[in-house]
Structure formats: C-alpha cells, structure tokens
Amino acid sequence: MHAFVELLDDYQDIPGFSPKALENMGDRVLVEVAHQALSVALELTHDEDLGLRAARRHVIGDAGAFYYVVSSSPTVRDAVEQASRYIRLINDALDVSVHYENDLVLLHFENSVVLPRAAIDFQVGSFFNNHVKEWLDKHTSAVTVFFAHQAPERVSEYERTFVPAAVRFSAPFVGFAFPKALLELPLPTADANLHAVLVPVADQTLGKMAQTKTVTSDVRRIIHERLPLGAPEIADVAAELAMSMRTLARRLESEGTTFRELVDDVRRKLALDSVGNRDIGFSELSYRLGFSHVAAFHRAFRRWTGQTPLTYRRMAGR
Image (cartoon, rainbow, N blue to C red):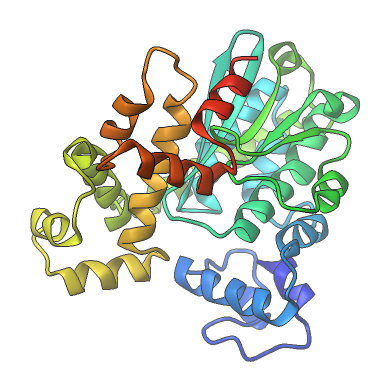
C-alpha cells in the first residue's frame, strides 16, 4: 500500500485511506478500503500497469517483521517455509503454499477474495523483488513467474519487473516455480541470532490474531460443493449460512468481493486445475463446473484465458 500511496502523492482524498494512516508499519488496512483506494488510483492514472510500477517501488523492509523473519532464515528452503507460515502477518486474505512437481518447487499464491489484475501484479511483483530475487540472487533467471490472467497487449512492464525471470500468463495458478535444487542455497541475509529473536515474536503475533473464518471462505466452500448441481444462487447460499441475501451481499462487499465474482473465480480455478487432464472430457468438465451446456463453458474459458480449452490443454501437455 505504501508504494501505491507514493504514486498518488498529489491525491489525498481517498475515503478511509491516507498516507498518514500508513506511516506506521504495523497498521492494517481493510480489504475493502484497499480495493477502494486501488480503484481510485486506477481511475486517476488510467494505468493498467500501476501494480507493477508500484511493486518496483516497494522498499525492502516494508513488510515489517515478515520480511526480517524470512530474510534471516538460513537457507532458501527455510525462507520458503517461513514465508508460507507467516504470510498472514501482512495479509489476512493471502495463502502461500509450497508444492513439488518433478524437479521443481512451486509457490502458489491463493487469495480468498477476488483481486483486480493490478493488485495481483503488485502482490507478485513486490514478493519477487523483495524476496525471490534476494533468495536466489544470481540464480533468479531460473525462476518462472505465473499469472492466471491472460497476457495483456503490452508485456514490457512485466519483463521490466521480473527480469531476468520468465513470465507465463493464463497459467493454472499464480506464483513462482524454480528448480528444487536451489532450496539448499544458503541465504545471503541469513542471521541466526536475529532469527532466534524474531520467530517467537512472530508466533506470538500469529497466536493473537483472530482465527475467525471469513464469510468469503464459507461461500467459496459452498459454491465448490454445489457446482455439479448447477451454478448456485445467492439465495440458497445465504439460507445455508442462516442469513438474508442482503446481509450476505453486504458481508461479502465488506470483504472486498461479490457473490457473482466468487462463482466465476471458483469456476475459473477449478477449470485451470482440471483442463490439462486428458482423462476428463470437456462435457464432463462443463458439468462439474455447473454450466448448463458445454458452449457456455467454452465461452467462459476463452474469457478467462484468451484461449479455447483445447488449445490450453495442448499447450499444457507440452
């Protein structure tokens, strides 16, 4: 958020949000306020690459205790594990999970709310510049950066932000991949004494943070369960959660999303996870995603990725 504020020094009238409120690194900004600020920023600048430019201005240490816990870890493997464990210190809506595929380690970024492209660009770009490049140093060219959205007309800002890594669009997940062998590299910023001091503090902070589940996570779960029966209606989901439609809509809005966005996002993620599996026909996949006919699935998939499911499957199989 600090980097976005710096790009908007001349604009001080964003409701619920001000540079002064963000001076202290411990301040936490509500998701809906952050989205509102970003919407204003995009409207004022007309800059689709705002998130990338802000990511490049993100200063090392802006993530507070999270940065220092991670960067003081002894190896890349430890840093990855610490990042996954402590990401909630800076973002309640983000989960960073570690996966292994053949000789690669994959870092998946999963947001519980639907984010605009600029927010995802900033999230991934700032993590790359403040963590991944520091961890891997001269091996950064071995990294691939993944985005689920389709490639924009101009990708020069992506190339500038993620150099020397490769960037892939219309991917099945958002995050990073790099060779598993690099996990054993010692971190150039490792500091055993600092790490020993910070980890108990970080654990204590995590323990104090509210463990309540968001309404968004409950709605996602219900949508996922009901999709094979057809796209669920907000009235049915609201009834299952014992609240009115108006209350559900208001709660989702307070968490920075809408019911329609969540249905579309759950479908998109399930589609990208499954479309590469040649054992699943497109008709069956369409059914699993709750589409009334396969043509509707094809239209949605092209909107999500800019490609047909068949083209995407062929590319994924390479």
